[in-house]
Length: 544
Ligand code: G1P
Ligand code: ZN
Figure 1 (cartoon, rainbow, N blue to C red):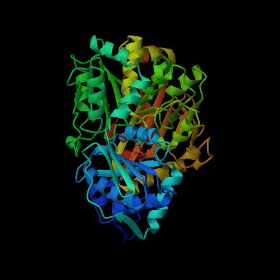
Figure 2 (spheres, rainbow, N blue to C red):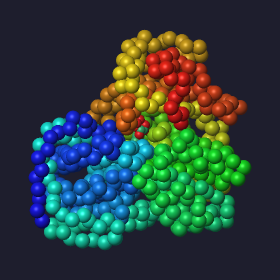
Figure 3 (cartoon, protein in one colour):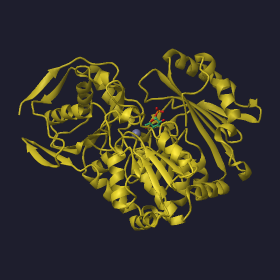
Figure 4 (cartoon, helix red, strand yellow):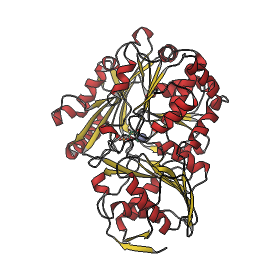
């Protein structure tokens, strides 16, 4: 087989963000754009010759073309084996599991997660290391550095590979395995959760469920696990067929984007349990009849009840949450004397803690929860966790949540996103906040007295690496917080995220609407950051 070395010129914008490199499809279609980034990754990695690479994506537009290019480049760069999901599909958590299970060197996951797909929408690529987790910052920085100096890439002259037929083939020095994308993952789930109990609870009608796959990758996974294996009624999984443009939708599981599910769960004929997952299957939204569970609460409830799940019956070694995630899980950790870590936003920061056995569960406010079973957040795993809890406790979702709030208090929580803000205005806001920070401690704003105001930085307790400028936080002496961050995953302008949080111990007030309970903080946030004033906008683009 002939290996070609193609001359190229560097692009200056291949700097991975919170989760890989994300750009418009049109950008990835520029001549050599994808090739350059893939070669930069391969050049940064040492000793890939003879190794195994896992490859798959969320099925969005450009997935198949990109996979064919990457196969040819992986061959040319000396990998000995490629493990590829049938149809070029692998959910992010399944890719993580497969890397671990087959002891691959790493994996390339093609996804822009919850961002829309299609010719005019987003595409993305991320590299996961041998532990199955997202490449830590020292890798992503090296990818970027290599991309800035890249002069050529290597590609094999090869016919396109048939991605649709399961099986193995040897092409010169490389073995190419097309695998069932679901089988290994389904087996892993059965090793963690009580599938007999779940089958019984679903079979008897105690649990009725609706899962919205949002025309994204979890369709085939959810059909197989929830309907075929656990016996949920046919049609329990909706929008189950992955589409290149996600049916024109925004595959982000929240009340705004999973509208169909949300409407059903608040209707008179709601099933007992509802859930949704995102483009690449790592996010989850949990709902019960007439209730939405915030991701921060979901993490706290999981931590408090983990012993009821067979896979965690021995207890947890610790928990972690990203900095903007509410402190609900901290209360559980304190109660059970568990170590609790606060990391910057992005799953890559959990990897070291999981590998070192410092934590078992972790999560983010952005609809991500996971455990040490893989090194990514995992949407369907969270769904099965909740189903298993409902079955074991014999309680509906609303009762589980209310009991939890009665014991620990309720952490009212909301995130207000202002999307596609002009870059200069966004930077102006950040500079303005940075200047404000030193003046705030000690100041009182109504009942809120500022106890600290700073920019979050994190020293990894395992490898000592330092990550700075990870979000602006203003904390009050009653435990409330306002946090400001610019998104690292958007592809248009800047997205300002405002995270708001307030603890309420009084259970008579737990049924308040979160936006009402947070009204004072919402006003204060505007007073600090002036986003409405500076952009002329009257409300956030999305509230979650
Ligand atoms: C967002 C979320 C973050 C998550 C990431 C990938 O990143 O906020 O928690 O890890 O997507 O799913 P952001 O756009 O805020 O940088
Ligand atoms: Zn995702």
